[in-house]
Image 1: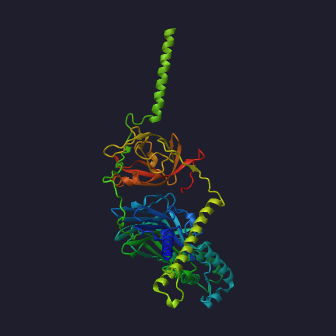
Image 2: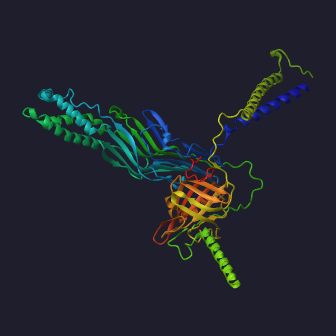
Image 3: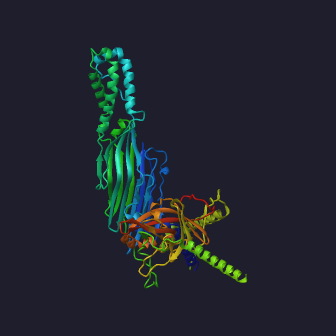
Length: 414
Length: 225
């Protein structure tokens, strides 16, 4: 009998412990989400250091939506970086259950100041405001060597009497052309955003670029390189040809050098042709700028990846400085603007314990389906004093009437 | 019946080994459950007895008892309009007040101060000017909106603006005006997109409820959330 009692007591202890453990582990055993989506406005990697605007994620277990992260990202949250200083970030996501199926949508992007954020379910989450400039990187050209060993010895000998002043002049000319801040490459952005939706079995997405162009800035002069397409097909690769930048640099140098050489080489004009020197110098500079003519910037527009058949990840603009850039002194940068992810979504599982007494005919509250709130002009009586004004007018009339009655009675007494 | 456990492993019956195993298992599980219960109790007592290092920051806003709205103010747009109740027609049309300088509060929507639902206020845009909500299309995210009631002033912060054409508004009516969802937000509605003969779209502004400002007269709003 005592053995049976002990067994019962032990069984009870086991059950009690199991109950405690089940309660403790409850969150870990939560149901699989029926719908999910997430959005990240901007992700940056600068010289190997990643930073981002945070990710806003929503999941729906079939009964309620749960959100993590912020859907109000701030540029300041990105910390110290030069890629973007001003602008409006957007990242939002939502879920809904209809007919037992999980639907989700997400939208993420970036625009200039004054942009308006709109509902994620509308296919866009940001309306452009002012344009914002993004600095893709600054190229340091100060280490260029103009007169190195490859420079013909014969020419160097001929230039010996004036070599030092010439070198000083060339250095100043180079600095003037290239500018103290070097060559800057950047994006001028109206708005960049991606959008996705998912439902059980499928997921789609797209990206939208409004008024986006790639430019280079050299000594205060802006060189427009390419205008990015508004509705780029999925995974559009845009390889930049910066040859136009090289041409601009050389043209600037030519102007500067022609002036400098014209004066400095006058004493030795008989033995050396200034034009030859100019050509040689420009060739030297041009060869050292050769990496610029390669595809230093790789842009992918409307980048779409499908982790599964029923989920999608869309990046509106994916920017990478290629490894070749490092040899030219670039600051390595990777930026992903507008990352949206949707799905996979499922159907809501059958409720094992349905409402035993459901309302057979739930009546949804009627809501307005039309608000005719616009007129061409205010008609007679439509542009009155308003409710407050009418009340005041009524009070004034009553006061006047009272005053009239009082005056009349006073006149009768008189 | 012998209740004493058998000794000598080689002579134990299967029932005795199971009994021994259950004994060890229940002992271990009892220890775990005791530790969890002690931890839970400790957390509860600790939370009650040990004060946090810093008291929570005092909110700049307090809750407001729900009441009918009487005045709408949007300082950034220079909007100041009396609010009158309006009802939904049988054909589900919400007509703003005939007097275009007034705005209408849908009397079946949430009162300002409510913790649930949406407060819906509609007002006219007039092509030639003079409508209470003429400048609504220009509202900026973050703009402050005040709604006065007999209980005080409820402050809202504009979060987003959306333009719906007539068909889109009907399709999205539940999302925009439905009272089942919403956490006391404000929904302002007027018209936009003049096409030469009439207005083709509605502009809808969604604003999140902050509460009644503790310091009256403040024009700047604290960040949402």
